[in-house]
Length: 225
Image (cartoon, rainbow, N blue to C red):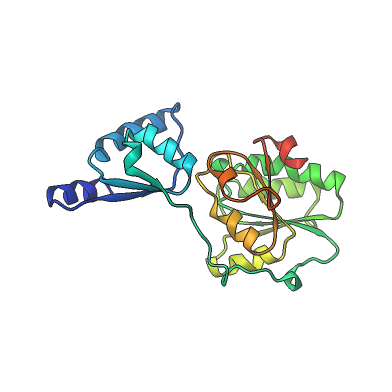
């Protein structure tokens, strides 16, 4: 991307960048990345961010004039993501769906703590987990340790056209992200008729109004409650 932006400037072409990430300021990787961003984004004509939190984060990291940065939230096609309660399965369960990359940044460690706590208090809960990543072996070990294979279903990586079917199986959508600029999957879940429970990090509180989503501090206990 840096090469494209620099080349465009040399050719006199105006440049606009879209930003949908949310990086920190403290660890070594983010410090180096932010310095690189300041170098190759210094001549960008405009930037579009997916949330106000993303805009604040981006303008601070990249040192871009905030008056050249605009917020345009993500959206979802409700013709492709619509409710269908007849797809809910298994029956007579409270189905909790979690679809994301199964990585540390997505808060899978919270999910690992939450699952046995919820099943202890709500025995008829059923977790439907879609996605792939480095935390899959730990989830499999959790299922084996607590012998909860009947209550935790790992779908693996999903093609995008299969996401709506997985969402419609649930009553609740759970998002445990540690950092997030927007979280489009929450919007897809709400469009499919699910109640959303999520961490209140980054731009997530901007995605859905109260009543469609419950926000919690990024702690296993708060999310479980």
